[in-house]
Structure formats: structure tokens, C-alpha cells
Amino acid sequence: MSIRIQLNGSQSLYTNLDFISGNAILSLTRDETIASITVKLEGESKTRLVGEVPLRRRREDMLIETEMHKEFTFSFFPIEPPRPAPNKRESYARIQHQFAPPIERPSTAKSPGKSPSLFRKASTPAGSMDSPTSPIMTPLHVCIDARLPDPAIITCNEPVPLRILVTKLNDSPATLYLQLLQIELVANTVVRAHHLLNENLTSTILTSKSNMWMRLPERDKVMEIDKGLWKDIALPNNVAPTFETCNLSRSYEVHIKVGLTHGHGKHLFPELTVQTIRMPVFVYSGIAPPKALLQAMAGTPPSQVASTTSTSKPSVHPPPSAPDSHTEPHPIIIQNPIATGQTHPEETFEDEAPPTYQEAIADGIGPVEGARRDYQHREG
Image (spheres, one colour):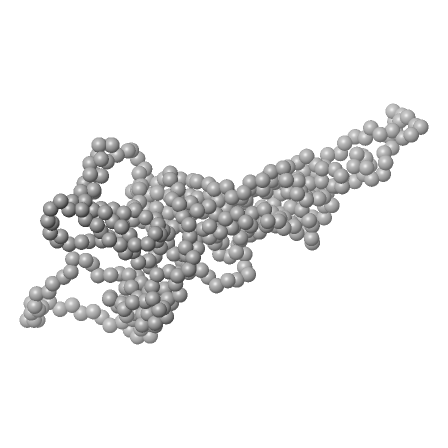
């Protein structure tokens, strides 16, 4: 006997609240009796911190699994948590830098018709940068801000809503130039097993530019770097959402490298400073939860939740009613039937455990409607 699973539809990516349907096709060489059919949705997590499983042992395990059940693999991409209401606040990270003062160079210019003596310096044109008598320019002091909406949430398959500001902190007449820009998304995956812990860092370069020589326009000492350098660059489809479950977790940071140089007039100073700003962020899947689910999570009665969606179906297992917050909880008294002389007929129990509260709520809510995301699992 061989088993083949064929799912309805052509989608390879599923999310919460989706209905998965299909057929289990049996190829028989003789008459068989089917005692039961059990369908389970199982997730797979591979965690290995020490050693390798011998190849022979792995083959034995594979043979046992193949003999006992048939598997069909597809990708699961979760719906995102509820987002806060839109606001005008921003999360930010900043760093300051002070450029070195310009070095005064000795003048070698000669006045026409005169030769400098041993006891007198040669005169130089007024206002020359090489003039030893001209005042030294105030060293430029700047602050670099990286800003994201608050809370700092970025979305899979979408550009990063980032703003980068450069602010002059003093009255230096210098002009700033953007020489280098790099935006990088760094993922930190933490695996725990008993007393062992392993952290795996992976990075995704969103944009990297150098030798730009882009003059920053000054307006009230605050200069914003052109968002056109990254606004059309979306997160690649192998970036998974932020998560934490069991012994696995993944968190993200955005690393922004900004390279600045400066000058005055026609003179460019050689100093190049590269500053790195790190911002912790949450990566969301971009699959918004249905309105009915949000209402259920907010405590709306299940009867009202079911009536808010046309695709809902009657709940098989209604969720337990929440206690009234204005009344005292009633004590639960457990009596021994033998001591009280009471007897009860023999009860039968199902093999499956009763549904959880989350399962009971979701039972009356239809699948997600709207755009789905493209996701490709990153190996390694």
C-alpha cells in the first residue's frame, strides 16, 4: 500500500486560520481495511548544538517514519500581532561626532617686488585658507539620527520606513558631504538546550553605496538624507518574522553606516568618518489578522464575533465564559462520591484532548482575506 497526498489549490504558503483540504490517495494491491484516518498539522524545528547523529541512525529513523505515516511539506507564514494605532511618534538612535580641526599650513607665498627677511614673515592674500594670520575654522560637530515609526516595526517584502538626519551642533561654516551609506538587517537566532546556548548571526545588505560625494543641503542646521536611496528597496523574501517559541527565538537589528566628509569653499578636508547606528526592530509578516480575530482577542463575546464575518461557521466547541470582573469568584467544591453515597454511570472519554481557548475562538472565524506574502525558506 502506498499513500499520496494531494492538496486542493495551488498555493504553497499557508497562514493562521487557513483551511487546508485535499485528498489522501491510496494505491492498493489487495483489499484493505481502513481502521481510522488521522490528519495532524505538525511543525518541524531542528536544533543541534553538539555532535552529529550517525548516518545509520538517521536512516533508521527515516524508514520508521515512512512506514508509519505520509508527510506533505508546505511553508507556513504566520499572521502578524495586532499593530498599535497610527501615531506621529518616532523611535530613534543617534550618535555624535566632532571632526578634527583644520591643520594650519605655513605660507610660502611672496609679496611682489619684495623678498622676505629673516625677521619678517611673508605676507599672504587676505582670506586665504593657507594664510597663517587667518582664523582657524571651528571644528565641525555633528549628530546623526536614524528614525523609524514608533514602535520600530518593519514589514516583510516592504521597504524600511527609515529617516536619516544629520544635524550641525555648532556654528561651523563647513559643508557636509555624504560619502558612504550602508543599510543592513542583522538577524540573531538563539537556540537553547538545557545549559547550552547558541547564537547565530546572519545579515542581509539592503543597500551599500560609496564614493558618493553627495552634498547635504542645510536647512536650519538639520539635513535629511534623501530617502530615495533606499525607499524602493524591499526586504527580500527570505526574511522571516520576529518570533520566540519554546527554545528558539529570532530578533533583528537595523545597522546604518553613514560616511561623512566636509569642506569649506573649494577646499575639501581629508577626514572621512564612518559612524554605525544600531536600532532594534520587530519584523512583521505583513499578513494582517482578521477584524473578527482582533475583536475576539479584545474580549468581544463569541456570538458577536461570529456575526461580524460572512465566512464564519458555527462553533463546535464554544469558549469558556469569562468570569465577571465585578463579582467575587465562587469556590469550587469537590466531593467524594463514595463518601456522599452518590454514584455516577460510567463515562466515556474521547481520545483527543479538548480544544484550547485559542482554538475555540478561531473555530468561528474565517480565513484571512487580503494580500499574502512571498516567502522562501533560507537554508543554513
